[in-house]
Structure formats: C-alpha cells, structure tokens
Image (cartoon, rainbow, N blue to C red; front, side):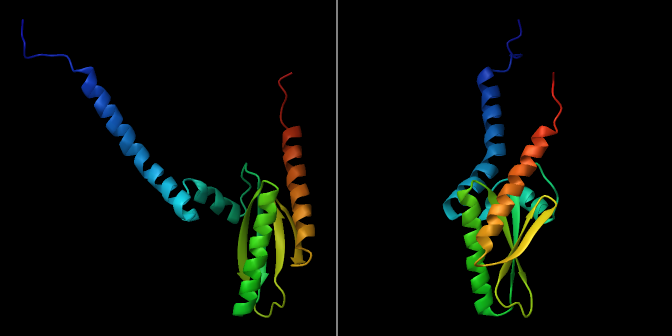
Length: 157
C-alpha cells in the first residue's frame, strides 16, 4: 500500500470554501456597513443602478416617483429649492414610497416649483404651497399604475 497518495481532507476543502465566501461577501458587507454608518447613498449596494434608471426615465418594475424641483440661480433660491425637495421626499417617505428628487437650475425662476413624474405621466409644476396636492396626485397615479399592472397579468385558471 502506498502511503504517499492520500485523499484530500474535508477540513481543508471547507477552509477553502469559507475563504471564497468571505472574499466574495466582504466588499458588499463593507459598503453596506459604511452606508448604514454615514448615510452616503453612493455606497448603498445595488441602489445606484435603479436610481440611474429612474433618473433616465426608464420604466422599471419598482414603485417610484421622480420629483424635479426647478429653482432660480441665486443661493437663496437654491436653499428654498433644497427645503422644498426635502419636504417632498419626507412626504413620500410617509406614504412608504421612495422619491427620487432632482434639481434643475432655471435662470429667472422666481419661486421654486416641483413637477412629479410617475411612469409616463407628469404632474405640475406646483409651487411650494401647492406641492402637497401634487404629492397626492402622484401617489394616486402610482397606486393606479400598480393596480393596472396587476389587473393585466395572465391568470392560471
């Protein structure tokens, strides 16, 4: 019997498997941990891809609203637009919806306005005082859009 030829030990195979799993999972785990600690959305795993599709107007299977805040080119107008965008995001968050808020600088724009985009529909522009009406309209459009998608699916009966 030849003692030099041995079968590979199961413990070594498990060690290699564990090392591979750790090597694959570490970057995603590190990025997610950094995102949870700092809140920096660029480190949120896989979210950037979906946000870029939404920003580009591509219809993805994801409940989303895109809000475009139009602001003037002065620092005061930009600050007011920032507050309006944050308020819109909080309003949609209260309804359980992720809203992607984008900002456009328009020269000569007096008060900031917001336009909501849901799928292929747009609502607005709304001023800051009327932005809540647009939130309701966009929420209803999103709800109806989701209901229409579910009604159009094929049944197995």
